[in-house]
Image 1: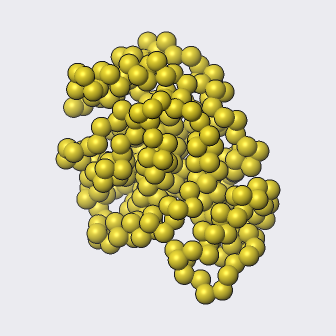
Image 2 (image 1 turned 180 degrees about the vertical axis):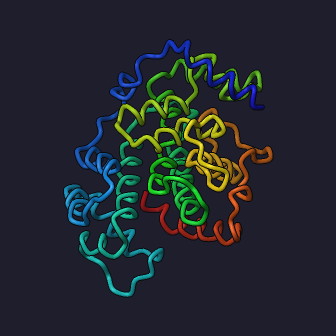
Length: 296
């Protein structure tokens, strides 16, 4: 398996794809609010006021954030009517993650895609992976935990770029997988000259995402190739995303376009993260996801 992954990775040197920036320009433009929210990811200290101001600029986003804060997920007795109060209660990171996912999924829902592509499934898969990676980063020794949610949310952006911007290539990949039962990454590398994970990584670079997020997205199928691998007592963010992605696929939440449901044993199992109680962590994830998914 290692040899196969290495061969897929090396094929990108022969890529004939349009520039990733060109592909990104074919997607709906980022809203000013989303652009500013993405920019805050590169800053270590962002004030409550700054995040509040960004969210309040978008009435729909502000309404969704307040709906989330007042949901059963947080179990507050009194109703929260102020975005600033919500940020002070829940913290900058959590509110920023919620605002990013709401803004990005709303943008994705505006895109036209092939008939075999389900934007609903794509959003569900992306959000589930994001939330699980975020939970894992709080429970296991994972490097760069502050980037966990965003890395999970955007790990499959390259797949979306292919479906929306390169419909002919998308169809060819799908036919190879369905008719010849070939692995998706192998088909992507042959037809595109790059895998969707590598496209996702290049998109992160084009958007100016912090290096750890770019690496986690780029290597989410091949964390053993991540050059920023931590020491033996810790796990890379790319490994955490790979683990979450596999688990969500095992739930049959991974049927997005040509991606097959993963019915094989996990290559990157949750148990390998050294969690004290795997079931408790999964119960926490499922509770949070079921409570929050309606708002995204």
